[in-house]
Image (tube, rainbow, N blue to C red):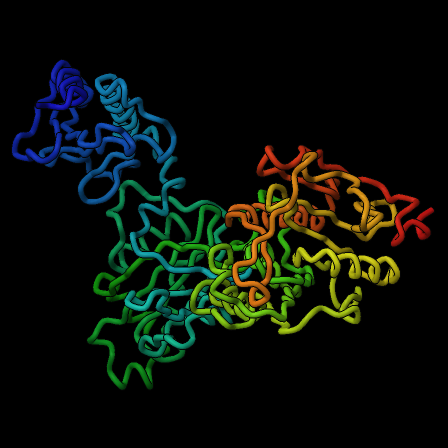
Length: 559
């Protein structure tokens, strides 16, 4: 029995004059004409996906006589029409007939504007798609112009080498040093800054596959780059030379290959200075390849997700405890750039990873019986090699608690006795001690809490519970609820509170948000609380509580 949605699609398209292509029975492809009575554009529409998760593909029919000029929004040799940007609209699966007609109407308007030259300005916005399907990674300083090199790296074990355009060093190349692939003698690259967006000239054949075609385009699009790749052949060795155009709408890499007939010992060794003139005369025989540039520099990797806020690239941060919260927090700090620039991330933990930790730890089986700090540091260096991450296979000491060493210290141990002592030494050492962020799970993981201390105007850690035997300033558990600890093997295994991995991940995220706020100098709540189980924990508002006079740690030290 036919899908009723397909029946409605069939009826709608039939009324528009489309017919089902029964030569493709496994797919629902219909052929018809758009802009009838005007341009009469034959197209095929594929509506096999009746959920409309992806847009129906609309292609210009093979019988269509294409104009001599290049058309915007027509992608690839199969003339696929790009009529909606990905994610631009949500199609209605409950109105399949109306949906396909909506797509046809949109495609008709796009084609009409393209054929009549009204949307040529869109070439610049889509230039990456027209430049080439192959990609090159760009690891260059912002605004860089001048000489660079191409290194070929293998990102996956069985993958093909991919080019990385960089200056003297690249964190991507460092990552792949053990599997580094040297192609020929390498490629000399010149990075040229173009102060406008690059675009397609619709009147020229595209893409340019020869130096002759490339130069015709460069004369119009980027005259400052004309002849630059030829001049690169005058020095060095090898038969490849490349240029990267750094334009307002992206990075665009191309390289020229010296034809075999010019690879003579006489030319390469004695007459290289003549190669630009020789190549200009034989430009139609010089192969040119393009690759779209993918930004992969440190600033782009760590800053692009922060919406204009500063990353943690220059902060010196110590993280004490690489357990359930600390392991995930270390990863989040690293992904926000901690350890890049002139900053550093130092991890402290004296314990080893045990099988019991695996259910809620960032580390897995390969790290069993290894020190947690060392394991987390190794994991981060594998994921993000440019970072300065140091592991300390020991406990944090009070001698480490200085502003000369760290800009911020984070206590993720969840051990109240240690936190009380750390807080006391920090308060006693003011103003020479750095601020401390305490983060922990409370009440069987029913809630997460964090407090940033360091200022005499705000509460210290001890201000949250001034009397060890007394109550909390902001109670966590509801009346009558007690913390349940489990111990599966008596004294042979540490007692623990049962809770799922979601709790430490969320606590780590809350702490990371506070670190970002601290780094950006924003006004924010110094005390934050998040409840996971409202049956057990009280709802507590976040805020910035002040110090308490009766606090044994800071009470006598604030005005």
